[in-house]
Length: 381
Ligand SMILES: [Zn+2]
Image (cartoon, rainbow, N blue to C red):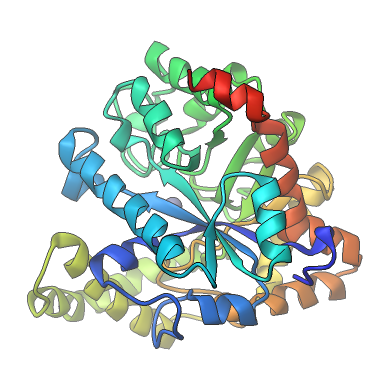
């Protein structure tokens, strides 16, 4: 936030905005009329650094293969282009030191994470390829399991953890200094990661299962395990993972609006991703009309829970902006991030604690996971 003080550098671990760069060719330097994030609103919200999640939808691009690789590469290229074409506003960052320097220069730091490792195409050497392209975290799966890693989003994930290749991927990420993201993986995969990784582990956009009992959230034992590695759970802003019962209400609304969504799909030209985006716009509008608002305080409830279980050193923020069709009231875009800081202070958190939660903790993890310059050079030989 205030750039004079290192404690107040704010880092959001997860937004899906890179797809908008590719599919809608949005100009992130102007205030966009829709969506949740652009440079103007980032400045209003005093967010210094954004991890752009590179998301490959397996139903459109596969869980591996050339199309998955191309889908990831096109989003990564778009983030690189954003920084290259707008050097007065953005700069690409790969380290905590980069983020601090860029924030102190009054610019916005753009970082890259892979959501679901489909684009590594079951090849170990691809992990290094993506590291070289600037990727600094990766989750083994999104909602679809692969042969080598189980997801929390499908049936097969219930019994699937990491196989030998999956464990090699984790060791390779440790070797390179790429953070391991457990958001979306199955419980079995989670524990295999904890057993395999020698470095701090993160969740980039998850909540506490003991408040909202959904498989995408983490149970108390898992939250403690992340803290024991020195890692951080960054709390997501999606009401379905924050508010008990919201998801069930949302599923009923999905049935009510099915016809509207189908019409939006039919009337949209373009790729499956572009059609899906048009459908999501309808969902966003209708969810806002038909579902009860969820207060910012609910985000703080999840943060509080993690702090009580562990300490204030193991929690962060991972909005999932531009990847969610509803937000808490008062967090409708990145511009409203100060409402979260205010709510934390109202709940008794000190300035120092708020700084840790909004970015300080993940900067520490980035430092712990990263190789020093000599180490990176050796790793990339
Ligand atoms: Zn996600």
